[in-house]
Each structure stands twice: as structure tokens, then as C-alpha cells.
Amino acid sequence: MCLGVPMKIVAREGNLATVEMAHVRHECDLSLSPHAQVGDYVIVHAGFAIEVLDEAEAQETLDLLDQVGFDTGREP
Image 1 (cartoon, one colour):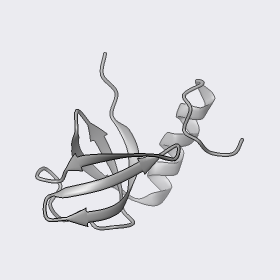
Image 2 (cartoon, rainbow, N blue to C red):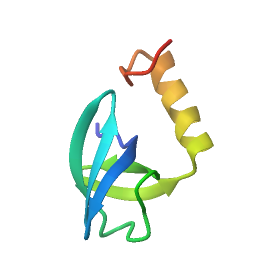
Image 3 (tube, helix red, strand yellow):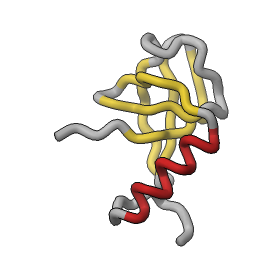
Image 4 (cartoon, one colour):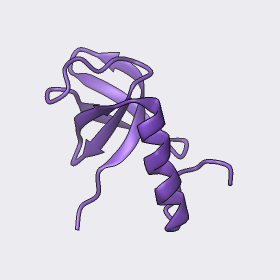
């Protein structure tokens, strides 16, 4: 099973972004979400940002992941 998780874009250069969750940073490709900007939350799956989320929706998803024991790196 694969899981797409919301991550925040902290840097962008062309179609590559640095995204962060739980104090861990990864690079992802923005080809599928070309309008995503620094500060946006995106769903990252298999190294691609597949959808841009508004912050409220991202936080709701992170809350649900916290409830099932997924470490999102946020304070309880």
C-alpha cells in the first residue's frame, strides 16, 4: 500500500521542491502541480507533488494521521 502525505514546500527551484514533514526534508518533483509555491502544502506520493492543499485541509489530514499513530512530528 502506498500513502500520499501532506508536506509543506520550504524551497523551490524550477520543477523541484524541498518539502518538509516531521522535521524531515525531501525533494519532490512539481511537474504535476506546477503552480505550487513555497509555503503551500502538497500531497507527495512517490516523489511527486500530486495535489496542492489549502492549509486547513492539510492540517485536518495531519490530525487524522496523528490519531492513527503516524509520526507527523507535531506536538500532541
